[in-house]
Length: 168
Image (tube, rainbow, N blue to C red; front, side, top):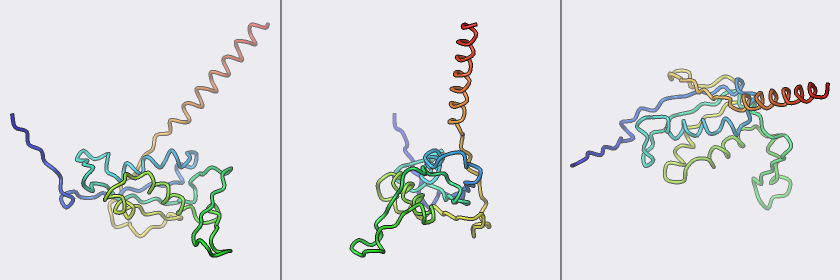
């Protein structure tokens, strides 16, 4: 029995534009938001996904200053080694755009498409962006973390209530 294998050419795939408003997800850390961005960039949510071709989409992040990072960890980066005073910079004082780009770039799969996918990510600090003519689709992220914390809080409440009732 012969099977027919067909591949999608990158020219045949029409890229979509997705937008993510980070102001809506202030309660989530960046580690919860980043996988949804990476999967949309790669195109794994498409039915015609193929790892060897670029079937990814464009992603626009607006209100990037509202993304929550871990405040206890100080991040430093050496921009120009060997130049005192100019080389070591604290990344939290700089716009979070560098941190977001570095994290998402490191989450992308290695290979030929990695540098092309980096160009498809657009990050803006405000809510204004020049990509209004494109038809934008919204990215939704499920917040599973809040449900777990609510369940833990309810279990603790009922355990305390049961121990208090047994004492009386």
